[in-house]
Image 1 (cartoon, rainbow, N blue to C red):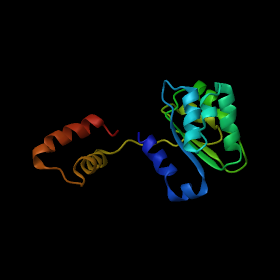
Image 2 (image 1 turned 60 degrees about the vertical axis):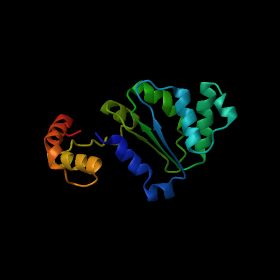
Image 3 (image 1 turned 90 degrees about the vertical axis):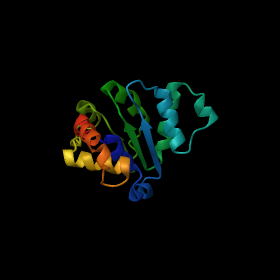
Length: 164
């Protein structure tokens, strides 16, 4: 709940932008193409070339690794579904001793634990009814008010979302 939004806020925080010159937000999803993920990383860090676009997958993974090796990077891998998916992607991320990080969002706690057993996964809580209502109002009406004529629909929507 809100994992992607939180990850984007972290990535675009001014201190993060200052500290991490190479940053990328990569949407992985359930059916991802490893090659596309690697090309998106290169594009995000300004290193996508025609040569890279034509590389075989394993060479491309190594190329990404080489490009990241000398940089302080923060890569957000959003919506990683399975441990096997992480295994296919992690080869591109060098441990370069430059405080670089890969932040993973996932619905599957076992993926987070597997990716780094030394760090406790961060879980986001569901919103309360009142917080859900306020969020809906701000997003739909631009303020924490709801016109009377749509109030009954507002309550139905907030209940239906159930804190998500």
